[in-house]
Amino acid sequence: SVQLNSSDQGMTVFAPTDNAFNDLKPGTLNSLTHQQQIQLILYHIIPKYYSLNDLLLASNPVRTQATGQGGGVFGLNFTGQGQINQV
Image (cartoon, rainbow, N blue to C red; front, side, top):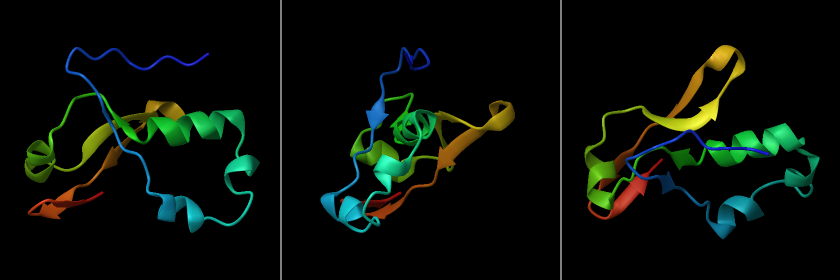
C-alpha cells in the first residue's frame, strides 16, 4: 500500500501523452518492479495545485512526491510561453 504525502494545498498530476507511451520500447512498463512503478507515478505528482498560469511562473525546480535513496527529492523544471508548457 502506498500513501501520498499530505498536502493541504491540493495536488497537480501530470499525465503523459499517448505519444510518450508509444515511444517506449515494447514491454518497458511491464518490466518495471512494483517499487519502480510507484516511483514513476509519484514523479508525475506535485504536492500543490498549480493552474496553467502558476506553472508558467513557477520557480524551478518544483518538488514532486517522488523520493530517491536516502530521502533525496526529485524536481521538475517548467518552461513555457503562452498556453504551452514544457516539463
